[in-house]
Length: 337
Image (cartoon, rainbow, N blue to C red):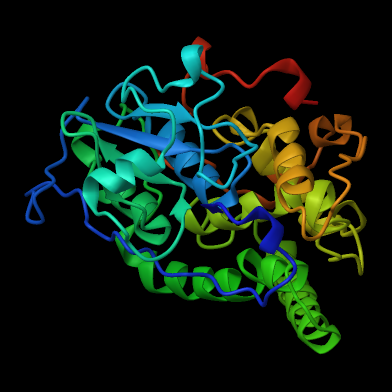
């Protein structure tokens, strides 16, 4: 999710840009960035679904000690994501006030906005990658030597073709589809995006009516990518983005699936509904010029029984759930049910 140009939201057609900085952090360091505990810092916003994927993956895999976490203010300004949640408005590790400073150290006058998730090289303060599609896949594979004991295999090799196919559909019609609907500047553009979104959700509901997870009988990267859109659906996409044919809570299968994941350690304990709502409603001034943040929806429903275990499946496969959230990374009470 990019920072800057807040008043443009809803005034020009939506185009998701490709990651400009697509370097990979690998075991062999073939692109100059070897996997190393403590060397890199993951910069995220809890408001952003693309960044939230990385937060969930990092927690499920137990990479908290190996890859430190910087959380940006959900209200960015035209200078980009900012560290105003930290003392002195500076990230305590990188020493910068805006994420754009790490981008500038990598390349000045680069095309595109300043987006999260981003991984920054701590020694040099330079951005390594903002490739939101690749970061989590590499955390699951290239970072394996640093995973916690009992970490799940989020991208199992025998299932990768199926996972990739499911994720491609989810990305095009759901992850990206809500933005195409929300930032549409014409009726036809909006209706096309909205129709594709709900058709895809109906197809996913049919798939999930028979199986607990999207691919195989354990949680994979595909579930993480669908969850980060579903968890925001009623809070922001239904009203703010006009994706309102029905609410998530009105679809029996998807609502139960989303609750199942939310109640799984590593998912719901990373979600900050306060950050999500304030970001969308206050930053997208082209869509919501008053900046008023709605009071609802009420959140306790996320903690109600889902009965998805009746479908079988083993959330972590042969592994185990992650331990408690590190104290410094706990979501404040007002962001949770």
